[in-house]
Amino acid sequence: MVKKMRISKVYTKFGDKGNTMLVGGEVVSKSSDRVESYGEVDELNSALGVACSGNMLEEIKEIINLVQNDLFIVGADLASTKSTKVPRIGKVKINKLEKTIDYYNKKVGPLKEFILPSGSSVGSYLHLARTICRRAERHIVLLGKTEWVNPNVLIYINRLSDLLFVLARHQNKESDEGEVFVNFKK
Image (tube, rainbow, N blue to C red; front, top):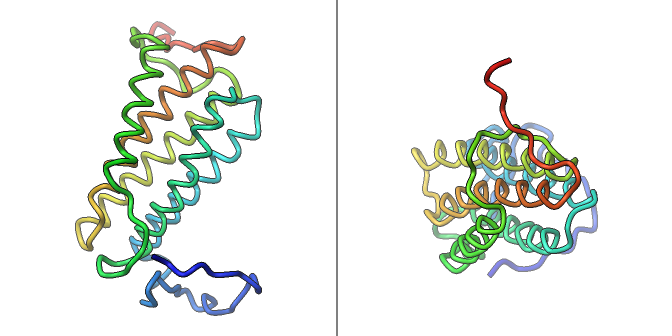
């Protein structure tokens, strides 16, 4: 397990020349695929925080809170090499996402048309988070072509984008805004 660190000083000046330190002490460029990958997961987590600041259904907020905590594990997983002892994303968390997707997918019903990533403000933010999640996924795939990545991280992020889509649909269905369908005739 990673030793808990207390941050007593926000700036260290260590990164002033474009480098950072991975969990475990390896120094890498801030432009490395590994740093890009966990940076995008951090951006996703922040986008979910913005989504939670709106009038989100309480049941969805509880799910997002769990996901945000999981994303810290994903970040630690991505910020470390295979030999570093850190919490890792495993199949239990993936199974939980899949069960949640199945539950909410039944509630919203089958998708019969393409929908715009819009609707309520919270639904729109969840769609935005979904697209950030997909970008993070693409970068994790790129990282995995040259360096070790826990395979469960990629699966978790893939499922998470599906979950965010279904939760956005549910939030919009339960709000006064509803879903907005693509109009291909315009």
